[in-house]
Image (cartoon, helix red, strand yellow):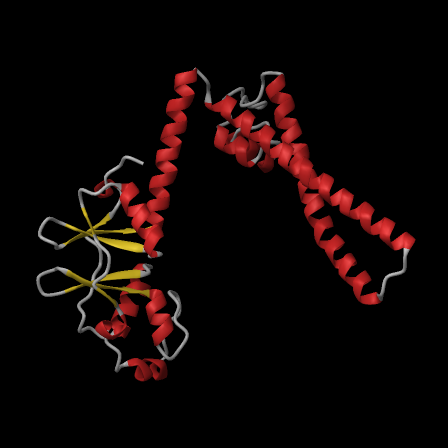
Length: 268
């Protein structure tokens, strides 16, 4: 994964000082919907990291991003400062490091973020698990596009291959369900079972039946899409003759209309 951290980190992140009240840190996280705060000294050097999990573990009331503490809860937590709860001397990386090194470090140390520092050791950004996932998704997509271009394929061909794989997986799951159903029926006919065991089997079947119905509907949609692919009409709107984007077909393989035509049909 050859990509510089600087391309994917969140620049100019929110931070807090070690002497601040822990409640102030919680307010910062809640206001901005974030889960980590770099802790900086007077020279903007990273001296710690405070996470939402740190606050949850230490504060004497339930901590969540959406629920502001009550006045009573705030009073019970005023003694705590950021330096009391933060991770001291946290792992950091330089702006010039690559994404693979960051991923290895975060996985090895089981940490959810890395402060990124400039050559003077001052905070330049932060890389979180979410940033890593965005980078991974983008890079994998780019690799897939390059591979498809190299072999002369199309996005629609990739979609059809994915739909075939999904159909095989669903069909295999249905086969396992039907085998379970047969096994339970055979077991019940050959030997008596007690009420508890019968209830457990019935509950398992009820859950599986619900999944079975959903799987059958999805299977029918996949078959419709694969049939249209075989006829060369997959991706062509039956209403206007325009293109149906692969993303729509991936989510709704049974559709044969673009979004505009589907909306017009609903309004009639």
